[in-house]
Length: 560
Image (tube, rainbow, N blue to C red):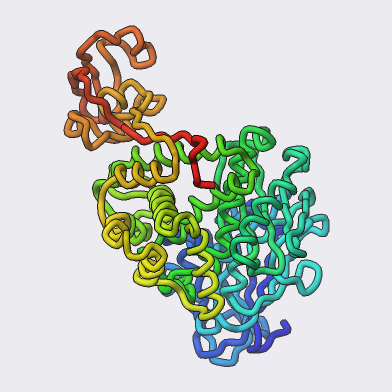
């Protein structure tokens, strides 16, 4: 074993192992007695505690002579090796790679895909040392990653934090497309051949890339990699990294046409993160501490603004039509207004509570999405800046200011600094509104109407097309299991999420035809929660529920 205290050496093996396992060996010189190795507790882009340690098994350690060293698990994600300071040792474990999403790991005979943050351990108090990584893969595998390469299958980074932020995609059958913007190479690596994409894919990617770089003035990386895991089944997920993104999308047969707007939209979103969160970051996360939660209340900047502007750039750069963007905004509005968490938890506290229940829906109507309501607030901020400056400035100018500030000072932003910047651009005309948008409750309906009217966008209020959602205030899935109940529904105390409708007026739900009973003023539904069965009389009144705003661009629209 060749090693010194000057670097940490990682090796990954994939052959002659149980299915979906990889073997990881970490070689280093102990900087202090009884060194601790630890696997991250979370990953940037997913602000919740992860269970990476649950994929680890068969930990062992030995010194240079081959003598086994004692290994003890000391907490949920750390292992301690009994060895004196100065010992050159290797620590080995198996890691289970069978999580096919943009933040996971996968290893089989045809595909090697890892997020190092999920499967590699750091040596405690030696995280700043340079790291080398050797991949012991089949010679037929093509490796694609943004990680700096030292030799074939051999990579080098300046520390564990950097090592953790370069996903690796390898397979004998990868397809790579390339385009350049301002002399910077951008690569599209895919697990399917080019026939799965339109011929315009590189032109389309270059178009939204150029638009984003134009607004920021420069690009913070020397190269960029879109790593596309195109799957045979339905999937949609993306994760940002310092000079790359991983996208999981499927089914593959639909990517060329039906899902192509989804591909463009999510790639624009993740590219925008190269500035916004990978560089421009909350002060609470500068630097990242991957081994404990880092709470922050500014998720509306990290994800809300990125969600709003990621789609905006696709339309602004004419990759897709304004009609496409109109539909995207209408979908966003529906997701926002159908989230009755608006009445129960603020946008700021919902950001903090990502660490409580992650990205799951959680209990009914408890919180809002920092992506959805965050994007709604980003739109309101954009409209406010435009109105105050007579359309001379937009939200994109605010983000440029943040970018220039980051480059000059290298500091993270705070709740107060974001508010101060926004107020400086809006002449303090929205001080009370901003506090209400971020820290208050409510669906912001009146604010949205004012903003849309100013931008020349026609707006109407509509109710859900589903019969039971519209007239009675509860929404069911295809199996007639209740998913959401409007807080305004008169049946809020009688029905809840997870209850299932067994019969409607004595008829099984699939045979019930609402169009045939438009004049009937009452219904009896039979429900179960899996334990009890009960009946509820539904009275058809003039009231409607699940109301949302919907928009239409006009000739007077000034958003573009």
